[in-house]
Each structure stands twice: as C-alpha cells, then as structure tokens.
Length: 282
Image 1 (tube, helix red, strand yellow):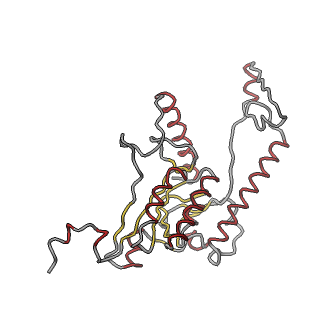
Image 2 (cartoon, one colour):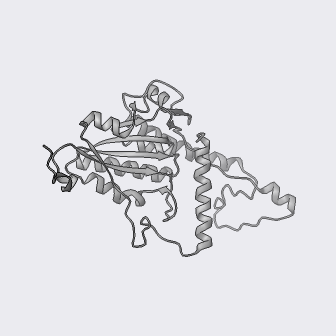
Image 3 (spheres, one colour):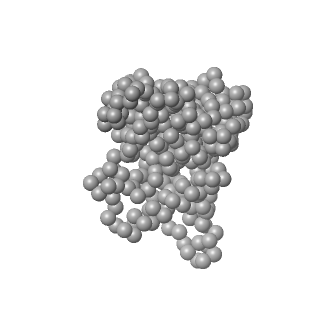
C-alpha cells in the first residue's frame, strides 16, 4: 500500500531512487553578459555548477549542452571548472548534446566522463576561426580617408578599414594554430582511447551524432532520461538546477539602463549566434 503522505515529503529526503542534478548550458559562449541574452560564460554558470556538484547524495551530475561555440577562453574556463568540481566532489559527469556541441561547445562537452548525443546532433568543429570584413576599397570609392594614430606600430593590426597586410595575417594564423593545439590537447586527453584514427577529426569539420559516435567523439546515442534511468534505475529523478535570478526576475547579470544601447547589443548577439548556428545548418 502506498503511503499517502509520501508525496508531501521533499524529493531530497526520499529513499527511493537516485536524484541527478541537471545543468543546462545553452547559447553562444562569450565573456559579455546581459540579462536579456542567451550566452554562456564562466561568471554566468559558475553558481549553477557549484550548486549541482554540491549535492552529496547524487553520484553524478548531468550537463545538457546546446552551443555552437564562441570564446575559446570562456570555453576552456567552463571546461576546467567542471573538471575541478567533478574531482573535488568525486562526481561522474554525463554530457547530453541537443542540437549542437561544436567548437567551444564541444570543448565544454569534453568535460564529461561520458558524452551522449541525438543521432541528428551536430558534433565537432574542432578548430579556430576569426572573421572580419575589409572596407578599404569601399572607403576609397566614396572618398573617405581613414586616419589612425597609434603608439606602437602594431597597435592597429588588421584594421578592417585599412588594406590587409601579409605579416598581420601570418601573425593571426600563428595565434590560431596555438589556440588550436590547446583545443586538440584537451580533446586527446579527455577522449583518450575513444578517438578513431582519422585525420579529419581536428580539421574543423563537423558531423552528426551518428558519425560522431563512429569517430569516438561521443560515447553513445540517447536522451538524458533514457540513459540515466538505464544506468541508475527506473526511479531515477532529474532535478534541473535553475540559473539564479535577481529581484526583478531576470537571470543574474548586469542590466543596461540604456535601452538603445542594450537593444543594439541584443541584436548584435542574436545575429552572431544565428550566424554560428547557420554554419551547421540549424
């Protein structure tokens, strides 16, 4: 006979089944933070991660990732924080990819002890990209002269309003190669023994979840409920850890009182993330 008072007891005090904290990391990865933008940074997710890993009763923490990438620095900082918390609290980390875990999104996914994806998820893009525009010919055509004054001959490196210089591009590529090597080292360390011998893995190419599994980029195909119930039993419960909110109900972040400036910032962020996601056909 079922105890009618059992439903009144908080889940954390019940003895039946395991409760697994779930953290959702979604959106473009960027250092800037706004209460109205869907971005991820270490400062934005640190509190949520700390709370999830502090759960002493759970043997694991589950992360849901849906990100096309972004800042390599913030990606690595989030990756490092997850691994530090996992080791300090002795937690197994499951990562579940939704639409996409590409570039910096995949770097964060590598913090998982096990990575699962949907068959149609986009996985990979292990590379570094920098993009801009060149307006020098346009300025010349409309009769505008660009004037830049610097202390230090390289201070205006890769100015989009000045003609591109070969040495500037070579310097940028050298930086990209160094960052790429850091990314590759993380993937090799975390996916050691899983990766297949394939030269394309670190080429910046991306694949579906099915192909990602074949290449060793993910461990399996499946959704969070199915995988965790199979691992810990049918009574396993998932507890989503919400982002902290301030007194106005927004996610904790600085609120820009300048409506026009904030609107432009929001639009810029939206277009940037839209461009990233469009790259993967989403």
